[in-house]
Length: 297
Length: 192
Image (cartoon, rainbow over all chains, first blue to last red; front, side, top):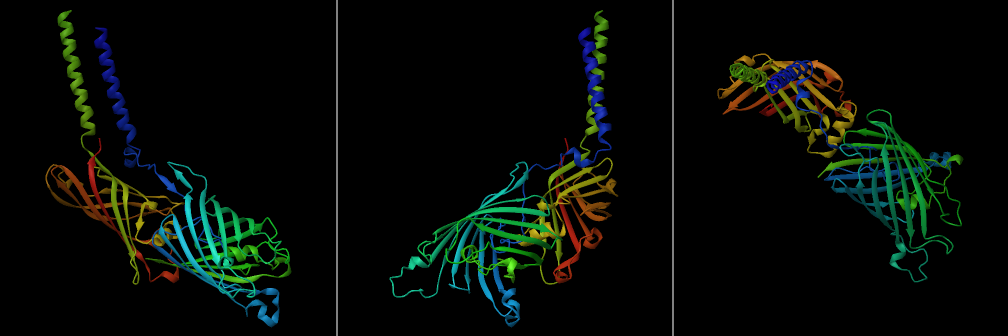
């Protein structure tokens, strides 16, 4: 008897639950019935507009099959005076092609006009990508390795010169995070090795730390800052300065136009970090621009 | 006592059957859904092809109330060109700020559709599309196909990007069309 009573009570309860459920569902959207909220790993991308902050590599990669043709141009220093049209008479350029075989790999070759007329090449690998959603990864880690090759005649032809003297190498670990839609920051510990240095007392290995940031102003324009500090003295004979660049990224369809001011004339990692002698405070500032045009192959 | 027990038993059974009937009646195949609705849009201008496809949209149809709802994650739109996809998310849809678009509406002539009879039934929809933070009435035309209990459907919509606060800069005016055609295709399962 008791058992039946319990059964009835249970059945009634069940029906009530299903009834109240049915009623409760009315004001809730239909989408909620099927658990519309997706739980997937969502990668946080586009921390920077381009694969370079200004002079330095950014944590940004290119989509698989993209070819990025880049033209870098630096005028002379503003403090070179009116006779040099405040630097506009001078030009230093670098052309390069970067290609992305996959979404997390980028390889590039380039050539700079200035100084040692260096060819350079690099390989860049996205080791860890910042993500949210199902899996939270707080930062992006990108590895960069590259080399530069001087193509000028040997400075002293009277001694035995080795081909390897033309080579220098650089390695970087880029640690970056997109803090919000508008603000991204990255740190880039860098090691540069030069096979040939000017004086015996100059170090072959230079350790540097790059700091880069972006503030988005509008969807298509952002403000960027790119600063690198070498920890050991680069060349004993000349006073060096930290390369510092500030500028704007302007996006127009398939182009990214980076216009900026910087005290460095070098256009690859080695020259930028080891050969920057101009001083911001003394007007050693150069107007420059980077043009990036991405093609899908 | 025995008789009383028997009557009791019968009552309980009857009650049970009634409840079961009621219960299943409330949920009898009145809703259909999919989590892999296919949405394509075409925003091609005069010089460039701009097509995208999203295979992960959620779609629910309530045949009792004629209500239709659709949830679309903007980042799930795929383009042929990686840069185009980046620009879509970063500059136009602003997918970080507005991750999801929804369509909530009604099929105005769902009574024409016989869900137990094979055939293709043309339908009309009215509803509100919410995208990029803007909600706007967007009607749609489409069809529902019933084939041996399987229900599928399609719908065509047309929107103006300017209605949803999505601006096309002058430089790319001839590349991106302000008028965008959207095609939705769904293969539905009954919602348990």
